[in-house]
Amino acid sequence: MLNPRGLLFDLDGTLVDTSRDITANLNRAFDSMGYDQLPHETILAHVGHGAQYLVQQCLKINKPEIKVDDKLVTEFWERFRAFYRDHMVDDAQPYLGVADFLQQEVRPMGVVSNKPEEFVRGVLSELGLLQHFKFAWGRDTLPVSKPDPEVIRFGVHELGIEAAKDVCMLGDNAVDTIAARGAGAISIALSYGFSTAEELEKESPDYLFHSFPEFVSTLNHS
Image (cartoon, rainbow, N blue to C red; front, top):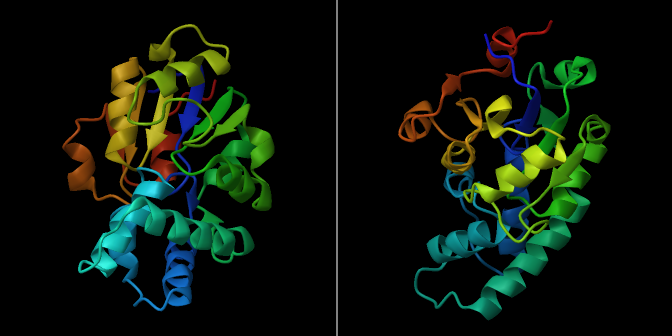
C-alpha cells in the first residue's frame, strides 16, 4: 500500500489526455507554412521533453531535406503557440478517475511538466483542475526541468515536505522516472499515456500502473 505525504504529477498523458490538441495544433502550424501534416502517432512519440524539442524533432521528420536551424524552429514554435492558445482544450479531457480523485485528495499536490507553464496552467484552468494544486510548473518555470532530479527536489520542498522518499512522482514518460529516481522520490510510471509499458519498464520505475484507478486503489486513504 502506498502512503506518501505528497504527490507530484506530470500533466500530458498523466492527468489529462491532451494528445489530440497537441497533434492538431502542430499540424495547423505545418499547414500554415505549406508543409505536409504528420501522423498523430509520429508527433506523440516526441512529447515529453518540452515543446521546443517537439517542434524541432517534428520539423526534422517533416522536412528532412532542409536545415532545421534556430530561425525555423522559432518561427514554427511561434505559430504552434498561437494556435495552441486558441485550441488548448478542444478535445482534452482528464483521464478516467482523475477529477474525482483530485476533488477528494487532501495531501498536498503539485504539477511538474515539461510543457510551457502558460499551457500547463491554461489546460488545468480550462478543465477546472488548477485549484487542486499548490503549484503547476512548466519547463520554463525553473532553471531546471525533467529529467533533472533537481526539479523534483524543488517540488518536494514546495509541497512542504522534507524528504523526497515521502513523495510520489507520477508520469507517463521515462523522464519522469529518471527525475524521480534521481531525487529519491517514489517513481510511478503510467502506461495509459503517451508511452508504452515496454518503454517505461526500461527505466525500472518503483511502480507501473496501467490506469489511474489502479494507482488510486493502491493508495492509503486513511
